[in-house]
Image (tube, one colour):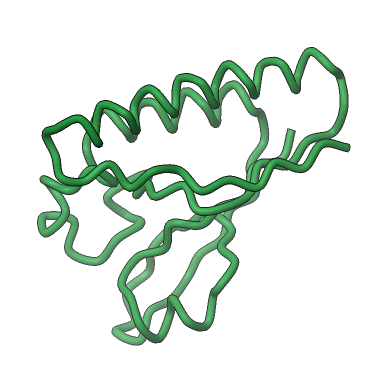
Length: 126
């Protein structure tokens, strides 16, 4: 089994070199994920992806439009990575405000639920 624990760059401010670096990092991760798949071993990609995958994964998505974590380019790259990686575990999380947000499995569930309106940690299984 391959376990890949990662911390994807934040990418802010957008636009700028940090954002471009984040996109390049995602391309390299997608390539590496393909290498894991070719090994034909079970693999787990886990960590802080610094990505808000969909508008349903954040309270008030309009607040995040210019944040690197929510940019269309980043969300598309993440979707391509997940498509390549295969099945992903999902969960629904309920915030204090009783809003329902889809979410990728997250590590610090209670802290995120109490202190934030979005989560950036996820788990992908191949």
